[in-house]
Image 1 (cartoon, rainbow, N blue to C red):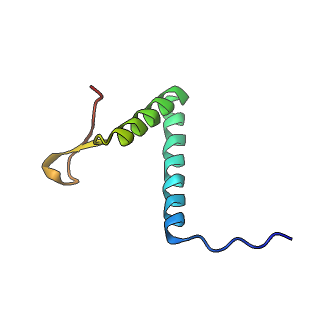
Image 2: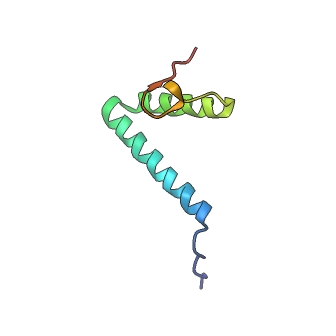
Length: 72
C-alpha cells in the first residue's frame, strides 16, 4: 500500500503555482494566436532567462510603463 504523499513544501507549492500560471498563459496564447506563436514566445522567453537577458523593459525602474523587449 503506497504511503500518502507528504505535504508540499512552501517552495514546491510556489513552483507549482507558477507552473499553473504559465500553463494558463500558454493556453491563452494558443487560443488567441495558435501553437506556433505560443511555442515561439515560450522558447524565446526561456532563451532570455537562460542568457540572463531582461524579459521586459521598465521605464523609470517602476511598474507603470512596461513594453516587450524585442530580440536583436
